Image 1 (spheres, rainbow, N blue to C red):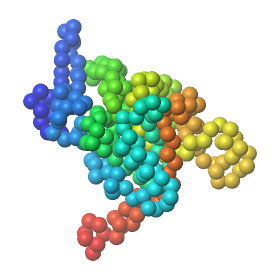
Image 2: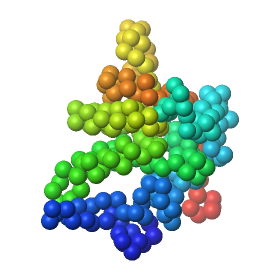
Image 3: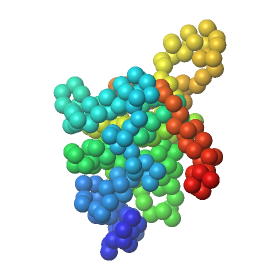
Image 4: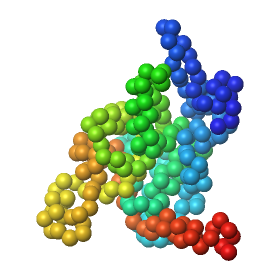
Length: 260
């Protein structure tokens, strides 16, 4: 982040309230502000800053093409009205097939073309950030952490279910997503876990085989949170090639030494 005269590049300004110091989001990071770097304002990690709708590899399967079309249609139609107002996207599928790519691409498109405010959060990072607000040395309250996440136009929550949900995690995430749902603010979520309801899972367990050994989204996040996601998101199921495997082959072939 470029240095700011107010926050020195930290993104937070220290203010005094009732003779106590607190951190608040600096104007240079304020959502919708004309900061020096759109990716900093969106909190997009460096790894994903090249992700666009134009460079997504959608030809690997009809399902991947359909996922791209859903993402592109969502971005083109934003802001949505009527029954679709506040509706988001839930990308599901295995590792490395482009879920985060599409989520970031939509976020970027909406920020650049529609001037929407947005934030990208890794699920585990978000939970750690909220938990750290309980530390008296941090001088930032839970409300100050949550308000920008709840109130941003578009929230990207990456890798939902990557960590087993504790009761506290489940309650906190339900609060965030429910607040966004009732105020019709879209959320774009990715998860490596396939979505099936409890009856489908029971049927697979009884049938046996490979599918019965899998863990599904509802088993990671619980019925209450899954039910809310089904109301607030269109489920986009993705199935394709793990691009990380191809990347590893490229690395092993000598990417750093010019292939020698």
